Length: 194
Image 1 (cartoon, rainbow, N blue to C red):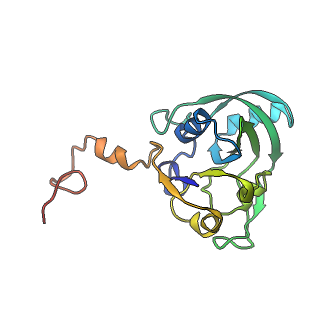
Image 2 (spheres, rainbow, N blue to C red):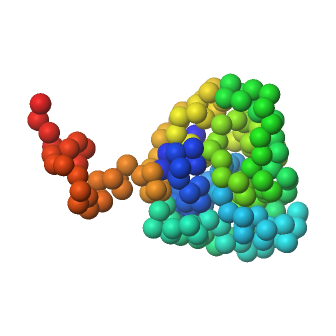
């Protein structure tokens, strides 16, 4: 399981970074799931293509291509379309109904990709199952999340690897920024000897 903290919507990030998904496609992963790309235009394009049909969709990267990768053009099969409502069953929202707006699951090669129209971090297995993704049978799952996902997803993961996909919340971004109004020295920008 991969958790991209740099594009975690729960931390105020865009939720449309594509670097991690791009790497998964390039690696030709099979039996994999990706949750999620926040992209209303892609949802609308998928609805127009229709369930069971294939078409080209421009995914994510539209808010700021410098933050986690620009739009990713994919040839995808539309597998499911939903209103985005699901009921949480895990520890982070047990019993509560939530919605990520009109949503769809599309298949790109061996990867099932959730595309949502209301930005939300991964918290509950129902976010995947409501779209027809079975997280219990995936070899690899990638999430846009930092911490809260662990309560529901860690019990089904053999291993969790936190990744920095270069999104707005990227740790590396803080070190590359040219700060002009910061009192120096300050950690982690400067080496500080105690």
